[in-house]
Image 1 (spheres, rainbow, N blue to C red):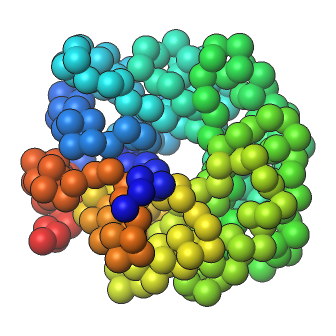
Image 2 (image 1 turned 120 degrees about the vertical axis):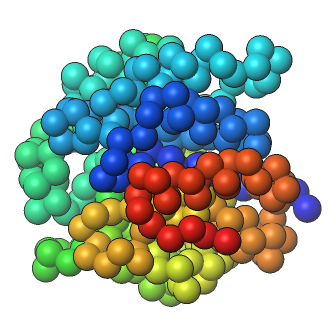
Length: 298
């Protein structure tokens, strides 16, 4: 099997809304175990206001401890740091080990106002600044199109809006984009159809998906995206976390174990051996029990 797929492990998304704070040292050790297990792309930290996301207040310290404990002979991973404003960008660029800046760009006016208090034009100006600053700093940039598969706010939505956004991002030299099903409402059919409709119009972009799902629908969504041509998938071990606006505690990140199983079924090899996951899976379940008060995942 050819190694044609990229898995982006997302502990940041798994942890950010947990009720109890995970110790800094434990976060750093978890990230190290992810690297040792073979994850080369990790959505690890965010640089946002600690008043709003207390769990991410120690991002600089987490990265410092991770950098200090990674074995010297191992390839350094691609570490994504999420930002939502210029202050966050400054922090991320000043943090050693952060190689990619991530920005959630919402095509929903309501969601954009509620989360960032920005107009469409203000948000686009920020993305353009992010692109300029990351190019200068020789960092990568990934833009997440939130609400890409529709939204519950009774707003205009359609593939043409997603395509317009992708064309704009391509025009300002963004090269990596992830389509996000922010509230986990997309059907497998919609996931496949939308990806298929937009992929041919944005040649030159690496186009991934960041899907949320109920567990019983996860495999079908992953396979729908893969069969439509997607080769970049965001997920989180044990399926912890996701969007708190989903209104259903069963709708969250798709479990990385399910993604690996689905891709294996499709004949793809993301380069991560399931046997190597044991240590970090045990840690993920420990986090579920101690800090999320959630059931363990076998």
